[in-house]
Amino acid sequence: MIIITNRPQKISGEVTVPGDKSITHRALIIGSLAHGVTEIEGFLDADDCRSTITCLCALGVKITEKPGSLLVEGRDMCLEKPAASLDAGNSGTTARLLLGVLAGQPFETLITGDNSLRKRPMNRVIEPLSLMGASFQGTDGRLPLTISGGMLRGISYSSPRASAQVKSAVLLAALFAGGETEFIEPYLSRNHTELMLEKFGVRIRKKDNKVLLRRGESLKGCQIQVPGDISTAAFFMVAAAITPGAEVFLKNVGINPTRSGIVDVLLNMGAGLELQNKRFWGREPVADILIRGGSALKGTTINTELVPRLIDEIPVIAVAASVAEGLTQINNAGELRVKESDRLAAIEKELTRLGADISSEEDTLLIRGGAGLRGAEVHSYGDHRMAMALAIAGLVAEGDTVVNGAEAVSISYPEFMQDLRRLITE
Image (cartoon, rainbow, N blue to C red; front, side, top):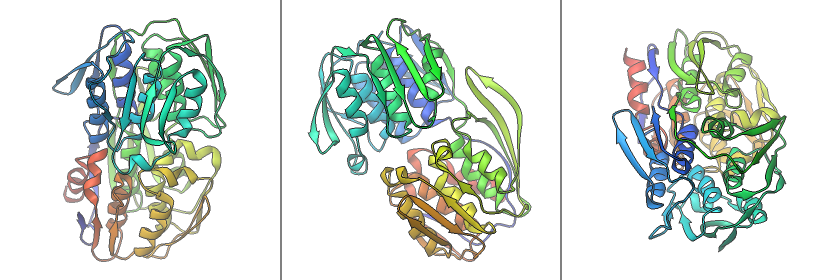
């Protein structure tokens, strides 16, 4: 449980947010397939990434933890058959990306997860991986699933949705497939897998929303420096943007353009936000972010092509929209219904408890800002991003806000409340 009591007098200070969750998963998985040792600095130490580590260790990968880094001893594409089922916990990234890897392994594996993950759809990866030659046994396209891998063939696959997890599963399977694999998506989703594979020595051809990979190059272990997670930074960005007189400085945040939609949205809403000290860590762009509160935010429209660039930030964007002037409309956000919770329903129900004027129509979220929030007892539904978004809403609500189920923040950011309190008390 998190309790936010009253509005803070000020929010100010500096935060170095934890490492990017998406990049940490990919560095661990691709490093496990490489030849040689990969060192991952600044990895995210949270439940989801620990699930990936546990699964990889069960597949015979040796992973050693040092202060601030992990050493992954790659197995040169050949994993071991696990002695028991693999448990992906709450992590959809772990499950879907590992299905791509396991499609190329010559053994049978059962993969499962917690109650939440077992409700999330896996058909979106089962379909292309089956076309490549893997076979699956399960119920209704959900975990637990048994995958039998082996000889794969390259395919050309047009995905009906922009999904980095589906794209990544297919590209990882393509490392084992004969011929060339082509993946096409309607809009460009986050491209961390493509950048990471190139870092490990794989040649990839990219054009617009199309990615092509041909098996041939070996993966070579390397050093990875993980930037701060912009999806985590988003909570502090919004906290500062909606609080008069706030000033928050966020260090070393990844600003990959396939992920930085939150920056565009806050600037469009009129937030006082600056990107400073831009540079690259490997192939990933990084910057420091300064956010000053006090500017009157205004409503905005988020259209289909922008949604993949900020899908995980929509709960906290909805908080900003609730206190902004005018209407915010978020279109084609149906993917939120199959996240850790039905986030569209959760956003509508819980922000309404706090006094927001918000409604959903099929896959569209409509938020009429300016009503003023009031403290209430709200629920996270076991969803880490809902828990953090509701805590941020509590900062500008009149009276006490109690967030039930807030222990879910350990999935991606165990130190969230500690860092938030420090900004409030400094």
